[in-house]
Figure (tube, one colour):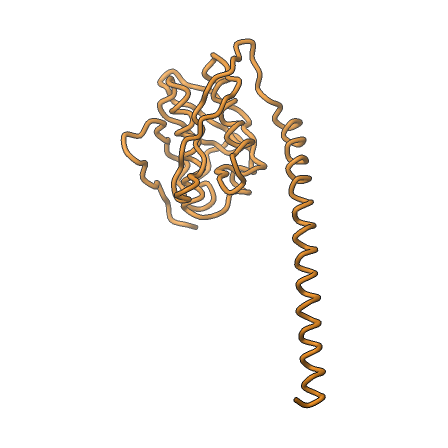
Length: 206
């Protein structure tokens, strides 16, 4: 082996070692940053969307639908204990807040972390209106699957825990949006108790 080749190999090995140390350092910084971001998001939510509390709240088991741990293209119910109101409107708000704020793991999240529920009400025919902040749309990963999981998790969570709601209409900042993030049609209503696995309601991307 020539002296020049030895020098080149030494430089290559040194670059690999430095790269490995840099990668480990970056990983440690990311690990330290994630809990801080979670705490900051919780503090922000406490200000923007304080927890819904009513005099009739009691601890109750609820089924909340997040992404399945075994089938990432499907939802699965998770039984959790929440303080829930006897009033259907307030109960629905509490359930959606839990859906946003407390997924079992980040990878199982269906709604954007920055989204908040601005208003919620139920019409006499069992139709619920859920009005979300702009982040519900702007922070939603674009793609038919992620959008479908989002709206379906809302509909199925409400259907499993608020019997008086039969379908839900989703608004964004008080307005009807054509799509969520380019795919799922938000001009329609979403059945909260589908008899079969709900189909993907789609529109063409613009």
